[in-house]
Image (cartoon, rainbow, N blue to C red; front, side):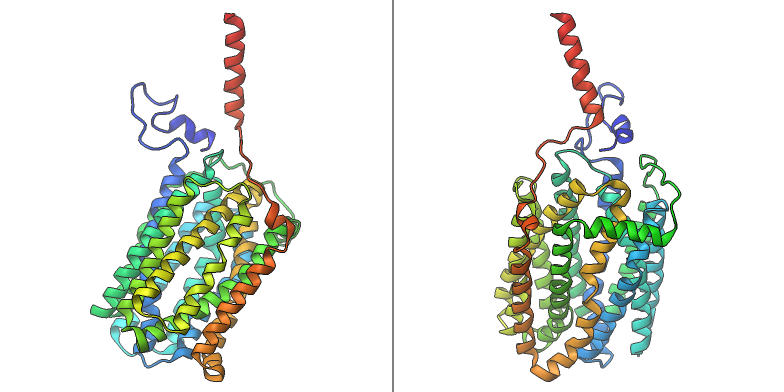
Length: 443
């Protein structure tokens, strides 16, 4: 919690006497706003992922078309992420977030109208999805920097776990609701709900306070900012090793679950409803993982986290068989739990190691590496199915995810980065010193 927030939080020393504490000391006002707004957008966005895939299929598209629409979102995300990170470290981050939410709202609303009106064209769906990806490129670095700067101290890991738990709970509900709504009402209404969610979240984020973040000194321009962010990124082996790992793993996971998953669901599992249920159970697993991480604090952050990346290969293997819906749900639960263990440890490492004024730029390089190969994987998923078959393609995804995770563990800094067990703020140090002086005077 920032010093500004500590003076105004209910139950803090600066609040009126006798007022009960309404939230934990680490949950600043910014943190609460970020958590609530992220939950709102996740509720809509996870339903819209199901809706977009089935909108393409209902319009007569095939695996290649589903992959092209998914790639249309990720390509501008890759192109603009580094610029988005530099912008977020220069401008007030909440302004960047609100503007991005507004663009997401408009693009999803137009997508919904297009689908509800009937006979959407592939190029139209790709164009609107690309607008959403562009907004995401500016939003993600700003949001991650804002979240990492909203907490401090030993409770940071718990704060990140609660944040991710709220996000994943919303994702679980959104996926289940989205799958059910697609089955009953069609994908257009799910896209409309997502547009409304972005509008609500943008309104909440407009109330974020950035007064605690020091003003950035005028620098040498955008290119200088990008170079500085690159030096911060490239100088930390644990950082670039994990990002390279996820550049490959995320691409394969995206192809397996965003392209092949709906097709396997349509052909073998019973359609959108069971697939939405499986995604919802994945969300339940992430909630369980967040609950676990509220208590478990492994000393070697990234070693524990990277071990939990191996189960991310399981959904591709399960879809390759394909297993019954009940078994797929169990696999998705375990995968969600493991992913959340990694996610909390990863955020804690970034919060612990990266200077505040470089958070968004480092986050942009993180995001860039993590999604750089997604457009290629999405676009090639259909041709790969034609060339090798869907089953072989899914087994290949599972094998490569396992291989790159094992490679990341070969980097010493990934195995050895340790948690800082004690972080003392300036205010806490001053308070401790004052208490010591009072005791010495009294004796």
